[in-house]
Image (tube, rainbow, N blue to C red; front, side, top):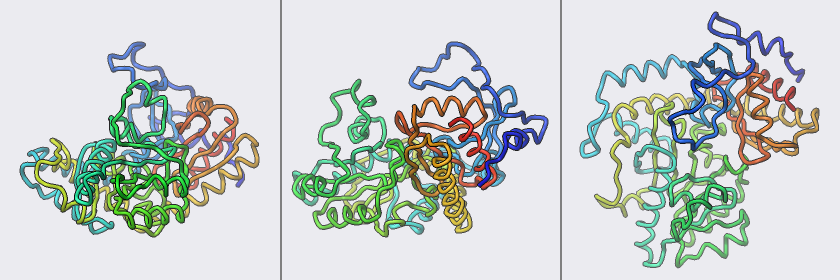
Length: 413
């Protein structure tokens, strides 16, 4: 591919009086925010979006290859999503899970119809979904043996920042300040021999796996490896939990990433794009797992409320559209090829990994440098570790838009 010129990159962001050329980041509203400093925020304030672009307070346009970290799958200012939000606002916002509402029931039925699952539990976030999956797996495992309680995760995993999920997250910097972590959760290498020894039929309740590790460097687990793990867990009465919080719901070109390996889990967790930017998570499970759960075993105040569920139902229908999934597969394959070509031309990329519209590239130098320099040129990317740049464009991104982003990355590299 001949890389687009910077003229074409800039021209694409001047289509209206509100859209200015990509350039240096705008200034934050104040030098000291009243928000707790758990984030090292970039020096830019975004005020609106359109398609695959965000615009700062000064009107500068930025191609967004972060998508709210895989949340904004439909991009920004989507007409269908806006209509769904307005329609949802005409109905109930909240009632309590002491009562049933139609949107939650219909969303659960749709997820069941489109997946392996028989039952669904709704919550508010990915970390909550994984914490709930740990509880459900342990509840089920105790029906198989009193000693079955351990949760096993893989090297490179990221499952959340709550105490249980943090114990299953392989990021020492995230873990160290909060020790001791939840006991009974261990991390093992992505190695069949080591996992075969670790997955004790007597003590292990569940194995949790991301089919594509996002925070761990965008590492696509081999389908054969996943099939082997499924066979081992099935034979030993160990629940297999698939964390598809980032890689699910169309991101890899299939509605669920597990489809690529031809397996079915016992539990699966979803979140990020599920409600189009509203907070929502879900735990999908087989009937065997669900039958072990009793009233009072778990709960949530807001999970699956009628307003959020109404919007999520629209998003799910959009993300499961065969035409969109075909687009992600085809455009994603092209994007991956172009990233490989970028690596060859620049000599500044050690490795490219990914699937669909979820890609990582290991760069020479630091990922933080590429993230910062890309921002000044009007492109948003994020890191996945010290040396991996992560690329998560909206699933509606076109080849032309992806090509403009590639041109900026080539200039930065």
